[in-house]
Image (cartoon, rainbow, N blue to C red; front, side):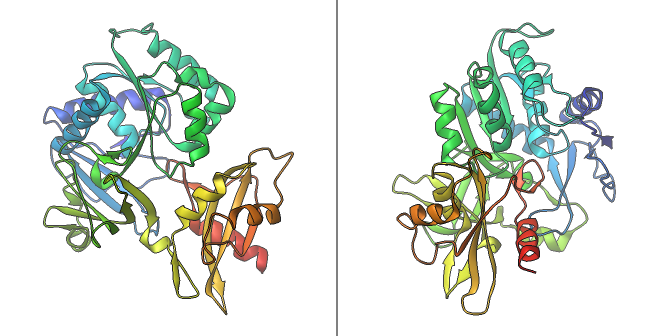
Length: 380
């Protein structure tokens, strides 16, 4: 077990342990601050990562060295070859682990950020310069990569977008990304690659809507429905949880609990978790589709859409909006008027609430449960 407190020393300890694990060494269990230990040692050549999911219920995901290696190699194949990596994410999460694994398989030492005080764009910029200029120790010329969550991307675009332009790819995952930041990144010359995946798939396995090599996608209703994933990057299962493993992993397929649809070209669009769907007036509303419209409106930096109990509608669609400029927030009424031209009647938020920031969980996903609690408290 390795306790990851955000310090470089802890990450270097984890890095050494992961390299040994990839060669058949002892199991590795990175633990975040205050996180309990896994129930037991699963044996050599394994990584155990804790995950609580979106609806609670703590689980320990068991990933083999082979699964991690398959994921990392498929990533490098998609991006254009192995390269040097900058770790800007918490090392106890699968996205952070995979940055270290990719660097190890590429034969490079990663560049690290000290995250004990949180993410600092200035420190990221300095680390990015060291990496992309090959000025650090043990670096050889080659491609340069990093992985971020949307909140980090937005902060960097607001402060120093130029520090991202020299990366050959910036992987973006952990949460849905509004079109606004993606367009800003593209305009700044940043090569963003959106990723979809989870701990059970050894991290991202669908890039820009297309599966990595060896990955299979199917939807339970043809071109739409619940997303199921298969491939060599799948986890072995949940440690000491055979019933949960049997439900989630069936005949080589992982049941994600996410909804998706394929467009006319076959590209996957992720619509969010099935249990986030809002049933209002007997109709299903996917929050992600409403959020995409809201975040595309002028003056909106981010949005989170939830369903609140309603005696007439069953649930009423309610949106929390984060202004792009807190000093000049948009009017909720004007936002509703603009959104009504792009949304169906069922999708239209009955109420839009302005907040300074969204509550987050994990590596940067909006905490919908916390948003519901906040909105309910306002009504109470």
